[in-house]
Structure formats: structure tokens, C-alpha cells
Image (tube, rainbow, N blue to C red; front, side, top):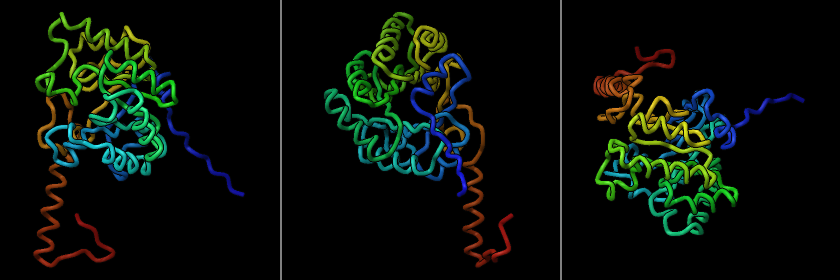
Length: 269
């Protein structure tokens, strides 16, 4: 009988144990194909509600539904074997009560096979985070610039520029950690504040437009690949895949018009 070595997926406790150690690597992914390419290189993949804008052309994350998140989450899980898969809880799926949040989070885990969920909010969501964790659902927090709350925040504004607001961010970070979250995303935050929070709390911080001092980093895959037309200013673009796709599609279109197609032993050059 042949023996097969099964690759063990990373778990939420494994990510939590990386606090202060080797930086945590993560990216978003929304499809099985893209997730399979990302999987070997990252510690976790986030199926972010940013898919509403990136994959569906929405103006914000607010319209994203629970069913849409589940559909994309299922696809990403099916295309991966190594990374922890975390699925965002969309706007309206956890704010009403801890009980409704549990029902929706349980649906996400059961119907996608993912290993954790993420929700936005600090102290105001601590009770919900604790409720979920106590019932066996690993939770990643998300504080600072929270896209689901931009209508209240007045847009996408960097957090922490006014030092008078720092105690509120510190309270949010402590509340999320004490409620049992295994890690927390710090988004759109001045570097000095992000570094301070990373030192103050016992769980890993994952930065996005925050600070190299965080315990890990995450970017939207399409942004860092150069596919997004106008990525956020803080994004470092590691490739120019967008222009390559544009060139490839143009060449394909011309080959169709010229009735030129490769034979079985030919490839495009």
C-alpha cells in the first residue's frame, strides 16, 4: 500500500503562535484558480468582502451578501491545501446580536470548510467575538479603518493622525484581544500607532496600510499584482500583470481576426 503525506493546513492557533516571530504572510483570494497559486507562499488567505469591488464592480463592500461570501469561500477552500482560509463576515451578518452572528458564522464554516471568520469592529464587537470563540468559531478582528463603516467614518481616512484618538484605538485592540480573537487586522493606520498596538497586545497584528512593525502583512492580490487600475497609495506593486493581460488579450483578438490559431505543438510567443 502506498503512503501519501498529507499537507496539514495552518490553523488559527498556529497563526496566533507566530506573534513576535517570523512575519506572517497573507493575501486575499476570491477564486479557486488564484487561491491555488497563492496557497504555497502564504500562512493564511483572506476571502475578503473586498471581492464586492474587485470581482463584482460594487462601489463599496456594503452590498456584499452572506451567500456571496460563502460561494467565494467555498471556491477558495477547494483550490487550497496549506493555508488557513479566513472568510469575512459581510455587513449586516453579525451586528444585530451575538446569536445571529453565531448562526451566520456557523453557516460560513459549515458551507465553505474554512478555518476562521473575520469581522470588523473593536470594543463594540468584543461581546460578539467572545460569544463566537466560546462556541468554537475562531475569529480574526479588524480595527482602524474599517471599510464597512466608511459611511460613519466619512470615507477612507487614515486613522491615528490625531493623537487624541489613540486611546480609542488602544481600547479597541485590547478589547478584541481579550475577547479571544486569535489575530487582528490593523488597516489604514499611522505607523507609530500601529507599532504601539503591536507591542501592547498579545495577539498578532496584520497590517494593511499600517506598519512594517506589525506581526504580518496582507494585501489585496489584484492590487499587488498590478491588475487593479488604481490601487491604494500604500500598496507596493510587485508585478505588472494587468498590462500583460491586456497585451495577451490584444494578441488573441488579432489572431481571431487573422484566422491564425496555434496547432497542438505550438504556443504563443
